[in-house]
Image (cartoon, rainbow, N blue to C red; front, side, top):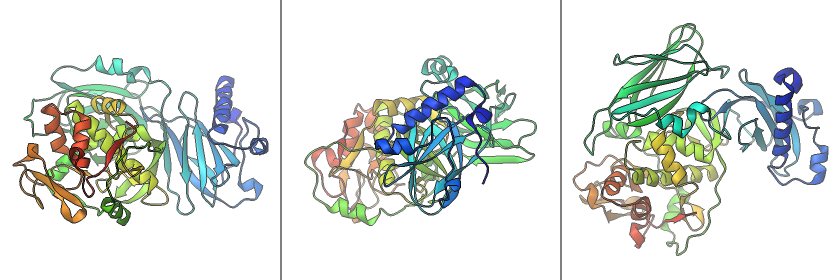
Length: 483
Protein backbone atom coordinates (compact mmCIF):
# COMPACT_ATOMS: atom_id res chain seq x y z
CA UNK A 1 0.00 0.00 0.00
CA UNK A 2 1.37 3.43 -0.93
CA UNK A 3 2.61 5.39 2.07
CA UNK A 4 0.56 8.43 3.08
CA UNK A 5 2.35 11.76 2.91
CA UNK A 6 1.78 14.99 4.77
CA UNK A 7 -0.46 17.71 3.40
CA UNK A 8 2.56 19.96 3.15
CA UNK A 9 4.41 17.62 0.80
CA UNK A 10 1.36 16.99 -1.38
CA UNK A 11 -0.28 20.40 -1.51
CA UNK A 12 2.61 22.78 -0.87
CA UNK A 13 1.12 26.19 -0.18
CA UNK A 14 0.09 27.26 3.31
CA UNK A 15 -3.14 28.85 2.11
CA UNK A 16 -4.20 25.62 0.43
CA UNK A 17 -3.30 23.59 3.51
CA UNK A 18 -5.44 25.94 5.59
CA UNK A 19 -8.32 25.54 3.15
CA UNK A 20 -8.02 21.78 3.31
CA UNK A 21 -7.94 21.90 7.09
CA UNK A 22 -11.17 23.88 6.99
CA UNK A 23 -12.56 21.26 4.62
CA UNK A 24 -11.88 18.55 7.20
CA UNK A 25 -13.75 20.58 9.80
CA UNK A 26 -16.68 20.80 7.39
CA UNK A 27 -16.54 17.05 6.78
CA UNK A 28 -16.77 16.35 10.48
CA UNK A 29 -20.15 18.04 10.44
CA UNK A 30 -21.63 15.91 7.65
CA UNK A 31 -23.09 13.28 9.99
CA UNK A 32 -24.26 13.38 13.56
CA UNK A 33 -21.33 12.16 15.66
CA UNK A 34 -20.80 12.04 19.41
CA UNK A 35 -18.19 14.23 21.01
CA UNK A 36 -16.08 11.17 21.80
CA UNK A 37 -16.04 10.25 18.10
CA UNK A 38 -14.50 13.57 17.18
CA UNK A 39 -11.97 13.35 19.99
CA UNK A 40 -10.82 9.94 18.76
CA UNK A 41 -10.22 11.23 15.23
CA UNK A 42 -6.76 12.29 14.12
CA UNK A 43 -6.07 16.05 14.27
CA UNK A 44 -7.06 18.13 11.25
CA UNK A 45 -4.33 18.29 8.64
CA UNK A 46 -2.95 14.82 9.35
CA UNK A 47 -3.73 11.71 7.32
CA UNK A 48 -4.65 8.50 9.06
CA UNK A 49 -4.11 4.96 7.79
CA UNK A 50 -6.40 2.05 8.55
CA UNK A 51 -3.69 -0.49 7.72
CA UNK A 52 -1.32 0.98 10.33
CA UNK A 53 -4.05 0.48 12.93
CA UNK A 54 -4.11 -3.23 12.13
CA UNK A 55 -7.61 -3.11 10.63
CA UNK A 56 -8.47 -5.29 7.62
CA UNK A 57 -8.60 -3.00 4.61
CA UNK A 58 -9.09 -3.03 0.86
CA UNK A 59 -8.03 -0.54 -1.78
CA UNK A 60 -10.32 1.83 -3.67
CA UNK A 61 -8.79 3.64 -6.68
CA UNK A 62 -10.28 7.14 -6.53
CA UNK A 63 -9.93 10.38 -8.44
CA UNK A 64 -11.56 13.76 -7.79
CA UNK A 65 -12.83 15.92 -10.66
CA UNK A 66 -14.70 19.19 -11.00
CA UNK A 67 -18.22 18.27 -12.15
CA UNK A 68 -18.53 21.20 -14.58
CA UNK A 69 -15.16 21.22 -16.32
CA UNK A 70 -13.88 17.68 -15.71
CA UNK A 71 -10.58 19.12 -14.44
CA UNK A 72 -8.80 17.19 -11.72
CA UNK A 73 -8.90 18.59 -8.19
CA UNK A 74 -7.20 17.71 -4.90
CA UNK A 75 -9.07 17.13 -1.71
CA UNK A 76 -9.75 14.99 1.32
CA UNK A 77 -11.79 11.88 2.02
CA UNK A 78 -13.05 11.04 5.51
CA UNK A 79 -14.01 7.40 6.10
CA UNK A 80 -16.68 6.58 8.68
CA UNK A 81 -18.20 3.38 9.92
CA UNK A 82 -21.62 3.16 8.30
CA UNK A 83 -23.29 1.71 11.37
CA UNK A 84 -21.98 4.17 13.96
CA UNK A 85 -20.75 7.22 12.06
CA UNK A 86 -17.38 6.90 13.83
CA UNK A 87 -14.53 8.57 11.93
CA UNK A 88 -11.96 5.81 11.24
CA UNK A 89 -9.72 7.25 8.53
CA UNK A 90 -8.79 10.34 6.59
CA UNK A 91 -6.94 10.48 3.29
CA UNK A 92 -5.51 13.12 0.99
CA UNK A 93 -6.31 12.70 -2.71
CA UNK A 94 -3.73 14.34 -4.96
CA UNK A 95 -4.65 16.05 -8.21
CA UNK A 96 -2.16 14.05 -10.29
CA UNK A 97 -4.02 10.86 -11.16
CA UNK A 98 -5.87 8.30 -9.11
CA UNK A 99 -5.08 7.68 -5.45
CA UNK A 100 -5.43 4.38 -3.62
CA UNK A 101 -7.86 4.88 -0.76
CA UNK A 102 -7.77 2.53 2.22
CA UNK A 103 -11.28 1.53 3.26
CA UNK A 104 -12.58 -1.16 5.62
CA UNK A 105 -13.83 -4.53 4.44
CA UNK A 106 -17.34 -3.73 5.63
CA UNK A 107 -19.75 -1.00 4.50
CA UNK A 108 -18.58 2.57 5.11
CA UNK A 109 -19.47 6.18 4.48
CA UNK A 110 -17.12 8.41 2.47
CA UNK A 111 -17.21 12.17 2.92
CA UNK A 112 -15.34 14.08 0.23
CA UNK A 113 -14.26 17.70 0.43
CA UNK A 114 -12.10 20.06 -1.63
CA UNK A 115 -11.47 23.81 -1.50
CA UNK A 116 -13.92 25.78 -3.61
CA UNK A 117 -16.27 22.84 -4.00
CA UNK A 118 -19.40 21.60 -2.30
CA UNK A 119 -18.81 18.54 -0.09
CA UNK A 120 -20.35 15.22 -1.04
CA UNK A 121 -21.19 12.06 0.90
CA UNK A 122 -21.51 8.58 -0.52
CA UNK A 123 -21.35 4.97 0.65
CA UNK A 124 -19.44 1.85 -0.21
CA UNK A 125 -20.66 -1.65 0.55
CA UNK A 126 -18.92 -4.91 1.37
CA UNK A 127 -17.79 -6.73 -1.75
CA UNK A 128 -16.37 -5.59 -5.07
CA UNK A 129 -14.95 -2.09 -5.40
CA UNK A 130 -14.54 -0.46 -8.82
CA UNK A 131 -12.29 2.47 -9.84
CA UNK A 132 -14.23 5.54 -8.76
CA UNK A 133 -14.31 9.13 -9.97
CA UNK A 134 -15.94 11.60 -7.59
CA UNK A 135 -17.36 14.69 -9.29
CA UNK A 136 -17.61 17.64 -6.92
CA UNK A 137 -19.78 20.64 -7.74
CA UNK A 138 -17.95 23.99 -7.66
CA UNK A 139 -19.21 26.57 -5.20
CA UNK A 140 -19.10 29.09 -8.04
CA UNK A 141 -18.73 28.37 -11.77
CA UNK A 142 -15.45 29.00 -13.54
CA UNK A 143 -15.41 32.27 -15.47
CA UNK A 144 -15.99 30.54 -18.80
CA UNK A 145 -18.80 28.42 -17.32
CA UNK A 146 -21.06 31.17 -16.00
CA UNK A 147 -24.46 31.18 -17.68
CA UNK A 148 -23.92 34.77 -18.81
CA UNK A 149 -20.57 33.94 -20.44
CA UNK A 150 -22.02 30.92 -22.24
CA UNK A 151 -25.21 32.58 -23.47
CA UNK A 152 -23.16 35.56 -24.61
CA UNK A 153 -21.53 33.30 -27.20
CA UNK A 154 -24.74 31.70 -28.50
CA UNK A 155 -25.62 32.74 -32.06
CA UNK A 156 -28.95 32.41 -33.84
CA UNK A 157 -28.85 29.52 -36.30
CA UNK A 158 -25.80 27.93 -34.69
CA UNK A 159 -25.08 25.32 -32.05
CA UNK A 160 -22.36 26.40 -29.64
CA UNK A 161 -20.09 23.46 -28.87
CA UNK A 162 -17.74 24.26 -26.01
CA UNK A 163 -15.88 22.26 -23.44
CA UNK A 164 -12.74 21.26 -21.59
CA UNK A 165 -10.11 18.78 -22.75
CA UNK A 166 -8.08 17.11 -20.00
CA UNK A 167 -5.48 14.40 -19.52
CA UNK A 168 -7.40 11.21 -18.76
CA UNK A 169 -4.83 9.99 -16.24
CA UNK A 170 -4.07 13.18 -14.32
CA UNK A 171 -7.08 15.41 -14.91
CA UNK A 172 -4.75 18.24 -15.97
CA UNK A 173 -5.95 20.64 -18.70
CA UNK A 174 -4.51 20.12 -22.18
CA UNK A 175 -3.53 23.30 -24.01
CA UNK A 176 -3.23 23.47 -27.78
CA UNK A 177 -5.49 20.53 -28.63
CA UNK A 178 -7.24 20.92 -31.99
CA UNK A 179 -11.01 20.51 -31.90
CA UNK A 180 -13.01 20.18 -35.11
CA UNK A 181 -16.09 18.64 -36.66
CA UNK A 182 -15.77 15.84 -39.18
CA UNK A 183 -17.74 17.83 -41.77
CA UNK A 184 -14.78 20.12 -42.42
CA UNK A 185 -15.93 23.25 -40.62
CA UNK A 186 -13.22 25.55 -39.19
CA UNK A 187 -11.34 24.13 -36.23
CA UNK A 188 -10.34 25.71 -32.93
CA UNK A 189 -7.75 25.08 -30.21
CA UNK A 190 -7.94 24.73 -26.46
CA UNK A 191 -6.50 27.45 -24.21
CA UNK A 192 -4.44 27.08 -21.04
CA UNK A 193 -7.46 25.74 -19.15
CA UNK A 194 -8.14 23.17 -21.85
CA UNK A 195 -11.22 25.18 -22.91
CA UNK A 196 -12.55 25.54 -26.46
CA UNK A 197 -15.53 27.00 -28.30
CA UNK A 198 -16.83 26.03 -31.73
CA UNK A 199 -19.93 27.17 -33.64
CA UNK A 200 -21.76 24.76 -35.94
CA UNK A 201 -24.67 25.87 -38.16
CA UNK A 202 -27.99 24.14 -37.44
CA UNK A 203 -30.87 23.74 -39.87
CA UNK A 204 -34.49 24.12 -38.82
CA UNK A 205 -36.19 20.76 -38.38
CA UNK A 206 -39.78 19.62 -38.60
CA UNK A 207 -41.59 19.11 -35.25
CA UNK A 208 -41.06 15.34 -35.29
CA UNK A 209 -37.46 15.40 -36.59
CA UNK A 210 -34.28 15.12 -34.58
CA UNK A 211 -31.50 17.71 -35.00
CA UNK A 212 -28.62 16.74 -37.27
CA UNK A 213 -25.73 14.77 -35.78
CA UNK A 214 -22.01 15.18 -36.40
CA UNK A 215 -18.70 13.77 -35.14
CA UNK A 216 -16.49 15.90 -32.90
CA UNK A 217 -12.75 15.21 -33.25
CA UNK A 218 -10.00 16.19 -30.77
CA UNK A 219 -6.30 15.90 -31.68
CA UNK A 220 -3.07 16.66 -29.83
CA UNK A 221 0.48 15.45 -30.41
CA UNK A 222 1.37 12.80 -27.82
CA UNK A 223 -2.27 11.79 -27.32
CA UNK A 224 -4.61 9.39 -29.04
CA UNK A 225 -7.00 11.16 -31.41
CA UNK A 226 -10.48 11.12 -29.90
CA UNK A 227 -13.70 11.00 -31.93
CA UNK A 228 -17.12 11.57 -30.39
CA UNK A 229 -19.43 10.31 -33.11
CA UNK A 230 -23.08 11.12 -33.83
CA UNK A 231 -23.46 13.93 -31.31
CA UNK A 232 -26.56 16.08 -31.83
CA UNK A 233 -26.12 19.67 -33.00
CA UNK A 234 -28.89 21.12 -30.84
CA UNK A 235 -29.46 24.87 -30.95
CA UNK A 236 -28.08 26.54 -27.83
CA UNK A 237 -24.90 25.53 -26.01
CA UNK A 238 -23.62 22.01 -25.39
CA UNK A 239 -20.65 21.54 -23.05
CA UNK A 240 -18.28 18.59 -23.33
CA UNK A 241 -15.77 17.27 -20.78
CA UNK A 242 -13.32 15.25 -22.88
CA UNK A 243 -10.53 13.00 -21.64
CA UNK A 244 -7.53 12.41 -23.90
CA UNK A 245 -5.40 9.30 -23.42
CA UNK A 246 -1.63 9.63 -23.84
CA UNK A 247 -0.07 7.59 -26.64
CA UNK A 248 -0.51 6.93 -30.34
CA UNK A 249 -3.58 5.77 -32.22
CA UNK A 250 -7.25 6.53 -31.83
CA UNK A 251 -10.09 6.24 -29.33
CA UNK A 252 -13.78 6.87 -29.90
CA UNK A 253 -17.16 7.05 -28.24
CA UNK A 254 -20.61 6.84 -29.82
CA UNK A 255 -22.82 9.72 -28.66
CA UNK A 256 -25.91 8.60 -30.61
CA UNK A 257 -28.93 9.99 -28.78
CA UNK A 258 -31.14 7.45 -27.05
CA UNK A 259 -34.23 8.59 -28.96
CA UNK A 260 -32.33 8.18 -32.23
CA UNK A 261 -31.36 4.68 -31.10
CA UNK A 262 -35.00 3.90 -30.34
CA UNK A 263 -35.99 4.99 -33.84
CA UNK A 264 -33.23 2.84 -35.34
CA UNK A 265 -34.39 -0.34 -33.57
CA UNK A 266 -35.71 -1.78 -30.31
CA UNK A 267 -33.77 -0.86 -27.17
CA UNK A 268 -33.14 -3.28 -24.30
CA UNK A 269 -36.35 -3.52 -22.29
CA UNK A 270 -35.46 -4.40 -18.72
CA UNK A 271 -38.55 -5.69 -16.92
CA UNK A 272 -39.52 -3.72 -13.81
CA UNK A 273 -38.50 -5.43 -10.54
CA UNK A 274 -41.14 -7.49 -8.75
CA UNK A 275 -41.49 -4.87 -6.02
CA UNK A 276 -42.42 -2.30 -8.65
CA UNK A 277 -45.18 -4.55 -9.96
CA UNK A 278 -46.46 -4.96 -6.41
CA UNK A 279 -46.41 -1.21 -5.89
CA UNK A 280 -48.25 -0.70 -9.19
CA UNK A 281 -51.03 -3.04 -8.06
CA UNK A 282 -51.48 -1.21 -4.75
CA UNK A 283 -54.30 1.26 -4.20
CA UNK A 284 -53.77 4.75 -5.62
CA UNK A 285 -52.46 7.32 -3.16
CA UNK A 286 -54.79 10.01 -1.92
CA UNK A 287 -52.30 12.58 -0.66
CA UNK A 288 -48.87 13.97 -1.49
CA UNK A 289 -46.23 13.65 1.21
CA UNK A 290 -42.64 14.86 1.34
CA UNK A 291 -40.20 12.41 -0.26
CA UNK A 292 -36.65 12.28 1.16
CA UNK A 293 -34.14 12.44 -1.68
CA UNK A 294 -30.63 11.05 -1.81
CA UNK A 295 -28.02 13.80 -2.06
CA UNK A 296 -25.71 11.79 -4.31
CA UNK A 297 -25.89 8.91 -6.78
CA UNK A 298 -23.32 6.21 -7.70
CA UNK A 299 -23.39 5.74 -11.47
CA UNK A 300 -21.87 2.70 -13.15
CA UNK A 301 -19.72 3.68 -16.14
CA UNK A 302 -18.20 1.80 -19.11
CA UNK A 303 -21.22 -0.48 -19.07
CA UNK A 304 -22.46 -3.44 -21.06
CA UNK A 305 -26.14 -3.10 -20.26
CA UNK A 306 -26.19 -3.13 -16.43
CA UNK A 307 -22.66 -4.57 -15.93
CA UNK A 308 -20.16 -1.74 -15.48
CA UNK A 309 -16.41 -1.52 -14.87
CA UNK A 310 -16.18 1.91 -13.24
CA UNK A 311 -18.15 4.26 -11.00
CA UNK A 312 -18.82 8.00 -11.00
CA UNK A 313 -20.21 9.54 -7.83
CA UNK A 314 -21.97 12.87 -8.23
CA UNK A 315 -24.59 15.05 -6.62
CA UNK A 316 -28.19 14.15 -7.37
CA UNK A 317 -28.95 17.31 -9.34
CA UNK A 318 -25.72 17.17 -11.36
CA UNK A 319 -26.68 13.60 -12.24
CA UNK A 320 -29.90 14.89 -13.81
CA UNK A 321 -28.05 17.63 -15.71
CA UNK A 322 -25.52 15.16 -17.16
CA UNK A 323 -28.27 12.86 -18.40
CA UNK A 324 -31.35 14.84 -19.35
CA UNK A 325 -29.91 16.02 -22.68
CA UNK A 326 -29.11 12.37 -23.50
CA UNK A 327 -32.71 11.24 -22.97
CA UNK A 328 -34.69 14.34 -24.05
CA UNK A 329 -33.81 16.60 -26.99
CA UNK A 330 -32.19 19.78 -25.66
CA UNK A 331 -33.85 21.98 -28.29
CA UNK A 332 -37.37 20.85 -27.27
CA UNK A 333 -39.88 23.10 -25.54
CA UNK A 334 -39.00 24.14 -21.97
CA UNK A 335 -42.02 22.41 -20.41
CA UNK A 336 -41.21 19.12 -22.13
CA UNK A 337 -37.69 19.38 -20.69
CA UNK A 338 -39.04 20.22 -17.23
CA UNK A 339 -41.35 17.19 -17.30
CA UNK A 340 -38.38 15.11 -18.47
CA UNK A 341 -36.21 16.43 -15.64
CA UNK A 342 -38.72 15.24 -13.04
CA UNK A 343 -39.06 11.82 -14.69
CA UNK A 344 -35.28 11.43 -15.03
CA UNK A 345 -34.68 12.54 -11.42
CA UNK A 346 -37.36 10.20 -10.05
CA UNK A 347 -36.07 7.19 -11.98
CA UNK A 348 -32.52 7.81 -10.74
CA UNK A 349 -33.65 8.38 -7.16
CA UNK A 350 -35.57 5.10 -7.20
CA UNK A 351 -32.37 3.27 -8.03
CA UNK A 352 -30.44 5.22 -5.38
CA UNK A 353 -32.80 3.49 -2.94
CA UNK A 354 -32.74 0.17 -4.86
CA UNK A 355 -29.17 -0.24 -6.24
CA UNK A 356 -28.54 -2.51 -9.23
CA UNK A 357 -25.22 -3.68 -7.76
CA UNK A 358 -23.49 -3.24 -4.42
CA UNK A 359 -20.87 -1.01 -6.05
CA UNK A 360 -23.24 1.33 -7.93
CA UNK A 361 -26.86 2.40 -7.90
CA UNK A 362 -27.66 2.70 -11.59
CA UNK A 363 -25.92 2.12 -14.92
CA UNK A 364 -25.14 4.84 -17.49
CA UNK A 365 -26.22 2.83 -20.54
CA UNK A 366 -29.51 2.64 -22.44
CA UNK A 367 -30.47 -0.27 -20.15
CA UNK A 368 -30.97 2.32 -17.39
CA UNK A 369 -30.73 6.05 -18.13
CA UNK A 370 -27.98 7.38 -20.38
CA UNK A 371 -25.63 9.59 -18.38
CA UNK A 372 -22.38 11.08 -19.63
CA UNK A 373 -20.24 14.19 -19.33
CA UNK A 374 -21.99 16.50 -21.83
CA UNK A 375 -24.64 19.00 -20.72
CA UNK A 376 -26.76 21.67 -22.40
CA UNK A 377 -27.91 25.08 -21.19
CA UNK A 378 -31.57 24.32 -21.93
CA UNK A 379 -31.67 21.04 -20.04
CA UNK A 380 -29.60 22.54 -17.20
CA UNK A 381 -32.23 25.24 -16.83
CA UNK A 382 -35.04 22.67 -16.80
CA UNK A 383 -33.27 20.85 -13.96
CA UNK A 384 -32.92 24.10 -12.02
CA UNK A 385 -36.57 24.98 -12.64
CA UNK A 386 -37.74 21.67 -11.11
CA UNK A 387 -35.07 21.19 -8.44
CA UNK A 388 -35.89 18.31 -6.06
CA UNK A 389 -39.31 17.64 -7.62
CA UNK A 390 -40.07 13.93 -8.09
CA UNK A 391 -42.93 11.62 -8.97
CA UNK A 392 -44.02 9.66 -5.91
CA UNK A 393 -46.45 7.07 -4.68
CA UNK A 394 -47.31 6.06 -1.12
CA UNK A 395 -44.59 8.29 0.30
CA UNK A 396 -41.81 6.76 -1.82
CA UNK A 397 -40.08 7.83 -5.02
CA UNK A 398 -41.80 6.27 -8.03
CA UNK A 399 -39.89 4.37 -10.74
CA UNK A 400 -41.03 6.79 -13.42
CA UNK A 401 -40.58 4.90 -16.66
CA UNK A 402 -40.73 6.59 -20.07
CA UNK A 403 -40.04 5.75 -23.70
CA UNK A 404 -39.62 7.58 -26.99
CA UNK A 405 -42.99 6.76 -28.62
CA UNK A 406 -45.68 4.81 -26.73
CA UNK A 407 -48.61 5.22 -29.11
CA UNK A 408 -50.55 2.09 -30.00
CA UNK A 409 -49.03 -1.39 -29.76
CA UNK A 410 -51.05 -3.13 -26.98
CA UNK A 411 -53.50 -0.21 -27.06
CA UNK A 412 -55.46 1.38 -29.89
CA UNK A 413 -54.12 4.18 -32.07
CA UNK A 414 -54.28 7.41 -30.06
CA UNK A 415 -53.83 5.53 -26.77
CA UNK A 416 -50.82 4.69 -24.64
CA UNK A 417 -50.26 1.91 -22.14
CA UNK A 418 -49.01 -1.59 -21.36
CA UNK A 419 -51.87 -3.44 -19.64
CA UNK A 420 -49.79 -6.56 -19.02
CA UNK A 421 -47.43 -4.43 -16.91
CA UNK A 422 -50.29 -2.71 -14.98
CA UNK A 423 -50.22 0.43 -17.19
CA UNK A 424 -53.84 0.68 -18.41
CA UNK A 425 -54.53 2.05 -21.89
CA UNK A 426 -55.12 5.80 -21.71
CA UNK A 427 -56.13 8.31 -24.37
CA UNK A 428 -53.11 10.22 -25.70
CA UNK A 429 -54.51 12.05 -28.70
CA UNK A 430 -51.42 14.11 -29.46
CA UNK A 431 -49.55 10.90 -30.43
CA UNK A 432 -52.26 9.48 -32.69
CA UNK A 433 -50.78 8.15 -35.93
CA UNK A 434 -47.25 7.85 -34.56
CA UNK A 435 -45.27 4.63 -34.90
CA UNK A 436 -44.72 2.73 -31.65
CA UNK A 437 -41.06 2.40 -30.61
CA UNK A 438 -41.18 2.16 -26.84
CA UNK A 439 -42.58 -0.14 -24.17
CA UNK A 440 -45.88 1.55 -23.33
CA UNK A 441 -45.04 2.25 -19.69
CA UNK A 442 -45.09 5.75 -18.26
CA UNK A 443 -44.41 8.92 -20.23
CA UNK A 444 -44.19 9.21 -24.00
CA UNK A 445 -41.21 11.49 -24.65
CA UNK A 446 -42.37 12.68 -28.05
CA UNK A 447 -45.80 13.12 -26.47
CA UNK A 448 -44.33 15.40 -23.81
CA UNK A 449 -42.96 17.62 -26.58
CA UNK A 450 -46.23 17.65 -28.53
CA UNK A 451 -48.25 18.52 -25.43
CA UNK A 452 -45.76 21.26 -24.49
CA UNK A 453 -45.89 22.89 -27.92
CA UNK A 454 -49.70 22.84 -27.72
CA UNK A 455 -49.61 24.88 -24.50
CA UNK A 456 -49.57 22.31 -21.68
CA UNK A 457 -47.13 22.95 -18.84
CA UNK A 458 -44.83 20.39 -17.23
CA UNK A 459 -47.13 19.75 -14.25
CA UNK A 460 -50.02 18.91 -16.59
CA UNK A 461 -47.77 16.62 -18.67
CA UNK A 462 -46.56 14.70 -15.61
CA UNK A 463 -50.07 14.31 -14.25
CA UNK A 464 -51.29 13.19 -17.66
CA UNK A 465 -48.82 10.34 -18.00
CA UNK A 466 -48.46 9.25 -14.39
CA UNK A 467 -52.02 9.57 -13.00
CA UNK A 468 -54.27 10.15 -16.03
CA UNK A 469 -54.95 13.74 -15.01
CA UNK A 470 -56.55 12.80 -11.71
CA UNK A 471 -58.21 9.53 -12.80
CA UNK A 472 -55.55 7.06 -11.61
CA UNK A 473 -55.50 3.30 -12.06
CA UNK A 474 -52.87 0.58 -11.89
CA UNK A 475 -49.33 1.86 -12.20
CA UNK A 476 -50.68 5.12 -13.56
CA UNK A 477 -51.43 6.40 -10.07
CA UNK A 478 -48.38 8.38 -8.98
CA UNK A 479 -48.41 12.05 -8.01
CA UNK A 480 -45.97 14.94 -8.02
CA UNK A 481 -44.15 15.14 -4.70
CA UNK A 482 -41.83 17.82 -3.22
CA UNK A 483 -43.60 20.38 -5.40
